[in-house]
Image (cartoon, rainbow, N blue to C red; front, side, top):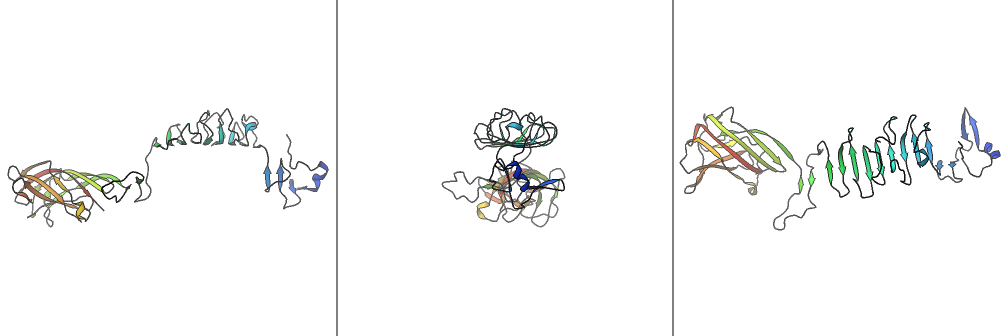
Length: 322
């Protein structure tokens, strides 16, 4: 094993450049640079040729590496190859996580010239167009995230977490409507949950049946869809026009966001045959104005005189929020 610092300095002249200080060999000129394989280093230390650092003489890739930093047992901790011709892992760079891993096992990070390598990195980058551009694997070698060569992104496990409120999936690259006016193209909200519906006249609430007061909702973007089955056990002091309050979000205050509903089922109500229960959004509020309609009398308010003590109905209702 030999070390060559300057190509053209004769052995007799070395002592004029170097000195031993407390067991260390140092340059006499503190402003000088060190060149290994070059007479004219551009920086403080320049190596022209391969570099290997470590104690492992059994490393099978060391002679092929441009830079090879080895651990003290069986393999590389960091390997950088210039040519990409290595049969074992065809790597531009491979980073190993601990002393027990070598080129035959799974490196922590690998940047490959092609996808023919025998290693299976936790993270790999490729540039030849024949494999995934990026792969991230978990400890069981299952791909948890990848970007395919065509641009598709796949989550093998876990969720896509939007970490900032108001941010989401941007669809602005799509072709927007040709006849309407587009106001937003970012899907920035999704949630599901429950809500508690209560029959009221706006001031006094009816007493709800305990098993028929909880509804469900789904919000996608600014569109909320609510469902539920609601029943009273007593109207109490509620009188006049009735509402169903308790929607999970306030309805947007804009005429273009009015929405209506038709009850899919209703019973124990004092209404005329052929009349149907309906309703519409109460803007700037979290309630539905209840109505009765038929094909001759049109739409009128649903009042306490039409709702019996144990009146009940089920609904599906969608509305917009700001």
